[in-house]
Amino acid sequence: MVEKEFPNVPGRPMPVAWVTETYSVSRQTLSLLVREGLVEIEKEGSASFLRPEMIERVRIIMALRKELGVNLAGVEIILRLRHQLLWYRNRLRDFPEGSCIDSDLS
Image 1 (cartoon, helix red, strand yellow):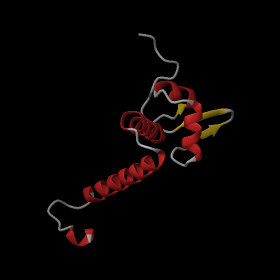
Image 2: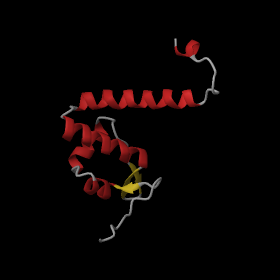
Image 3: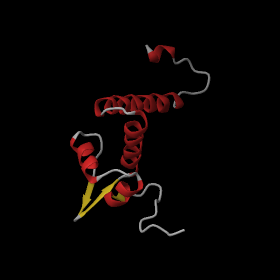
Image 4: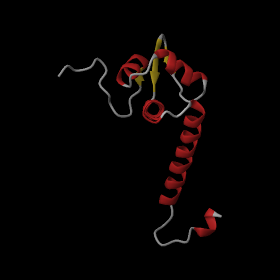
């Protein structure tokens, strides 16, 4: 097995070229995702990188588009709902075990 030039290290930003190759997404598609506000690219000098959470968004977007045929408007809605679900899940974890949370959810 040949080691990639940029091994995927959790928590580490990865170059755009690595992301486009790994997730089979063209630079044009990635540029479209950036223009639509679905993905953010960080620049450091002349190099462009994606943070781990943006890499995960690209992975999710490409799966929704290729496997399920979801259009960009649908992708945006799904990502927003996913974000809200994760936010609520994290909030619920903060409640002590056995506490009443019904009043907080109304």
